[in-house]
Image 1 (tube, rainbow, N blue to C red):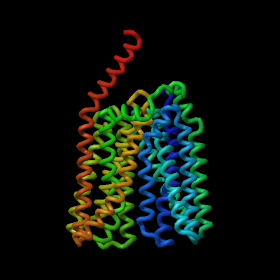
Image 2: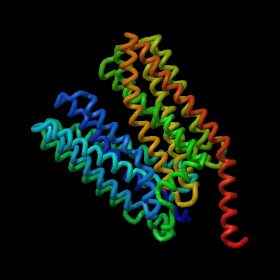
Image 3: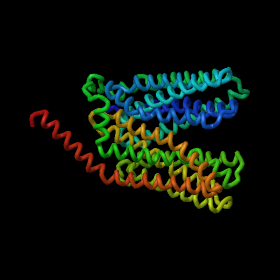
Image 4: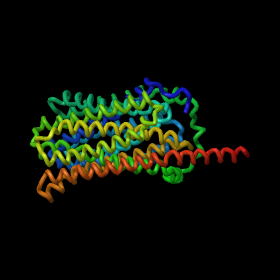
Length: 448
């Protein structure tokens, strides 16, 4: 890595790209989703399939990451991905207009839009995270993960607020204008934020230095044979499966088990997000201020976050048995706190593992981790809500159904904590072995 690297301003500039990604994605997964279900009375399964499809497309992230490895520069992939994402976001709004005249054609247009959205998110997001990993000093990576994640959430919040106000009263023309503003604005903001940033942060990286690489399958096989990368990808899948499975379950749980009103269940989402934000800031600050302390190592924070999330979910199992007397909002805050600790520590570890692998495979490694995360999110959202519906129909009791759902998620988080602990035991020895092999190779090439 270049000695210059990225300062805090550079990290914030990259965070603006993440803000733009969040702004466009929330337009599609929230507003467009709602319009399909409410205004057009489509089954919730229809937008659910579209959102899941955009997640499942993240399985292509290793291929896009490898492409940026071969080129040597990440900026073209970020700009290209943002262009595809912005186009997909705008087309998703046009699909709503088409549905007013021809439902089948409108759904086809929506499918095309969400394909572009998934492709753009994967291409831009992978290279963005690789650029962060390569250009940010190790001591700052936890804070960098916190900053870009908070800025992505800010993109969600600002866009949701803007759309909510602008679409009152609702019309297709207003929807098209709002989508055009959000998508074009996100693309332009990303281009301005990334302008000449990579060149100043990594001036020594040139495309011609990274041309001699195996083709994609060979490179992917090499990365998968790295025990640390493989175990971390499995950890990401298991933990993100548990993390995403709870997203669509909490508010129905509050309504059916605690007899909460819509305004009261909305407080649950606020408590969860508030706790997550607190956990992210906590890890970002402590892991950065005491970066030399082994106690503050990201692996320890991952274990704390996963184990804490598991215990918080067990707490919800107990809460479902006790009922309205249980202090549910504080319990959800604690769950969010543990989730936030886990999320930032995991993302910071992604940065470390992607940047420390050598052989110019940063993009492919980050793509592998991103694919595990995206596919887990796609499966988890359906699995959590689907399992709760299935258990309620089978057992006839929402209490028993949600106890099974939260218990299953707790087991996944406990498993993720064990995987993280095992990775910590093997990573140092494995990395020393890899470094020794690199030294031997250099000696042989130099005739030593």
